[in-house]
Length: 383
Image 1 (cartoon, rainbow, N blue to C red):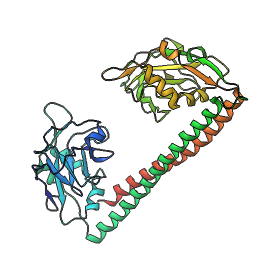
Image 2: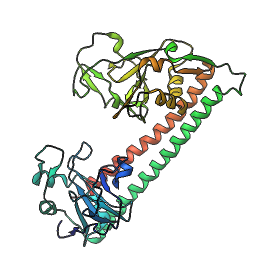
Image 3: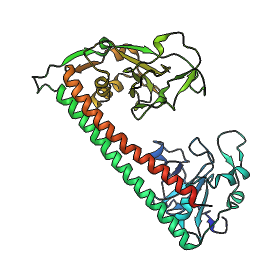
């Protein structure tokens, strides 16, 4: 590869840019302030690498999403400052889009495995020298083939971007419709709709989860953890395991709502409803189980209600903020006043929400299929 790229050593000595960059496996080269919410770079960026739009950088830090680090091209900004721990380079005599597509595959992993060792302090940084990195072998086809591969790659990225944008817009619409439906039933302007007011503790039983090894890879039963709640749903791939459960009430039932009682102040109160029957899922620590005891409210309606901005802000305002995470106790959460109409109106709202959720799931599945198709094409377009 070293014959077709040139290493970048230029420094940001004149402070041409004040954008401190980091590499995200998902989002590419991004501003640290946007990604972390703060600057983790040195205050003085003069000794950082000055990276320009279209140039590449290799981040040797590995993660679950990027087991051998990430190689990304700067696209979001004209310039950025990058730590000298990164290896920066620019294409020469090779199609830049072709190179970007290659690094979006796993074809280059084998070289990294051969030449790298883990950092001495086991801090997640691969110990690979620039010389060894640039010895990477790449099969480079003729220019017209590079162009064809680039066109296919860019087309797939465009389709994915459009589908992602569609999902974002439909998710906003979904939230607006839900807000309107619930507001319609709760507003005092509609006096013909009877609305009941009860404390949450009077309509659900709130219980704590059991302690277990949330990182355990196998066991008799799956154990929920905060990560189990993903995008408003229960993700069974994000659970721990537990071998024995002495309290049968710790097994979650259909209609139970998992509610995060410890998290960042932004995400505290995220929740999901158990929808699958006979699910051998155990209620884990750091999550409340909301089990409905009042037959005048449906689980789906309560789940939707708890996700309204009004109730989310209530939880944030009553949470105990800490340095790293916030928390809310059962007594506080039990005092939350819930408003709900009769069952007939609840079920009508549930049906509308269900139809919209089904449509959104179809669109999300399309995005997943496009991602799989892209990876299949990439793995087979390169030798």
